Image: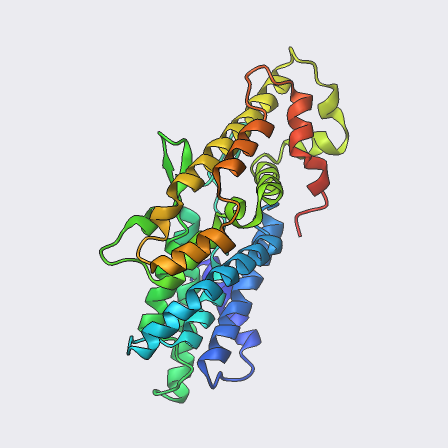
Length: 332
């Protein structure tokens, strides 16, 4: 038994004081496990972006999308589609809480380099750990009652796996930005749970606007560049000279993040229609007008205008743009 499985078993033994009697209770139990694992990762991996704040932001954005899509789902339910709206909400809530449960970074021998994650590795590790725990719970439930209504069904498990998998990002070298490729697979299309989670996960710009978008960029930079944090805390970063290698190193990393911010904004605006394809026209219109209301050419133009991308941008100007000191009380 590996360390993760041992920890899962220990949590299960310590916290399953009462056998769940309903699917709601089972999902609550699994969610509590996921959040404990998530909180441990935040501390152990020194995470600044992937924190409870991120989960709350994704939940808020997902709720807005779900409320817009709800009448369409309700209509499908009345027409005899085989899903329960209440169960969809439960599974969406679990996937929001669990989707970033594990964060795996590539070993980086260079002290002054951004740490990075290989695409899909963290998400697949999250799925494996979560499903392992669900299977343990289901075994316990079946021992008490093979027909228990609290059992997480194979259909539920497939939906959870698909939803978290849909948050895996692929890099587009032409756009120089990331996108969620599962949203473009229409044979068959991803479930509504997967689509909502994916859209809520990386669409801060469209739903929340420029300030939140830039804040997330700053938090991601801190999370991926831990070596910069001591230099910010003691102010040494502001005393670096432009001809020093460390000055140039940090400047390049900040400039790379700025250019990504611009390219990602352009990509989000260009891809939105494709990512909601398959939803009814009135739902798409409402999402465009009321939910993703900042995803406009004007917003993208503003991002381009305010984000420093010139090769000669001084380090101090880049630091002023990201306002990194504002976030140094994290992680939490």
